[in-house]
Amino acid sequence: MNRARTPRSVRLALAILAAAGAGAPASRAATQPAPLDRVLLSDTLAPTRVRLVSISGEAIVYEDERGLRRQATVGGFVGLTPALPDRPAPARRGRGAPDGGVLELTDGQRLPGAPAPTGGEDGAVVWTHPLFGRVGVALDDIARMALRGGPGSPQTPTLDDQLVLVNGDRLVGFVVSLGDPVEFETDGQTVTIPLQRVAEADLANPPAPLAGLVVWLDDGSVLVVTSLETSVDETVRLSLPGGASAEIPLADLRAVVFEAGRLVPLADLTIAEQSPIGERGVFDPVRVLTGSGAAGASDLNAPDVELPGPMRAVFELPAGAARLAAVAELPLEALPWGACDLVIEQDGAELLRERLDQDQPRVEFSLAVAPGPVVIAVEPGPRGPINDRVALRRPVVLID
Image 1 (cartoon, rainbow, N blue to C red):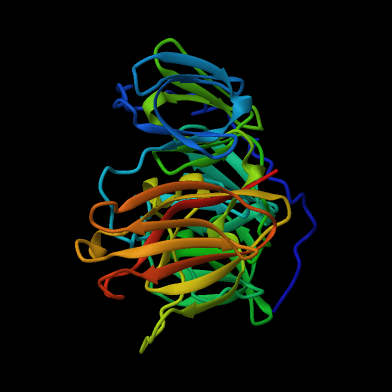
Image 2: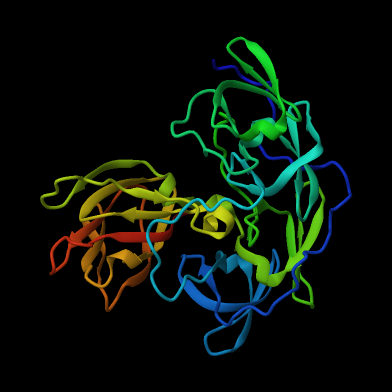
């Protein structure tokens, strides 16, 4: 069955339905962040380790590696991310579901929490966020609503909505409402299912681009905000498009992108071709490692990408592509014997060639690129192909 819903705005509209709970301060006390615990990305995606002092939609104050305090307008920066661990991490990292439920939107926003007691409205879900209270989200803006641990998302997307029950049963059809009970149309009839029996709902809505000022929080929230402002007590006030606001400790502000529409995750791009280098009995293709950030959210919504052996992959860069940036490393399981060359080429020109081994397991890069095919290859090192694999952490393309 493939049935369209009543047309609604594709753009997210977070409508605050009640003031109760909005603006409540975070329960965890503010803590002093560790020195140089953030990475500030310039307008060329060049990384700088900093300690964040304050941030707003207009300016950022930070301490650099020499301990000097600096202030700058955000116009010269793309955003801010957490610093990676000092040592390489395992390549395979799980989805990392939060303790409670989560609402994932078509543009990549994530709202932890639970359905409000009032349930759903006509064409919308009423969701209780731990910071912002009750928000209303249109059904057409929802990609997934997970309520508790269960079998997980469908392995193969379909043109229809899917409902996963706590016993593992999966229904395919059309979500009429996500209240309590859930109304679901399947096999030509509408059934009602108590919300407590539902583990997950996956809606077949088309993806939408993430745009505007976006924040990533330590509780797994990914939110478009209209403003953010640091107070003298090292708390940050965030405001949503619907007008609600809340305060969190500065240390809980995990990442910020000042204009998310300028960043495209490498994981979202089409791989035009991929092939092994050398003789391989079994060829493992490029892997996307989802949920590498806090509570299952990838930092910058850019999942890590792994090339699991000597291979060559051709990615199609979109219109406007200007920079390609990532942190390339030998994952923990490839050490100490892994040794390989990471090579990136475009239009026959070599943009990068770096040896990754025990002495240099990590390389950060930001390369000037153009729209069109770009080749990313892992070439065997002096010890042969054993353990030659590369994980690209937070790989993104900057759009001009």
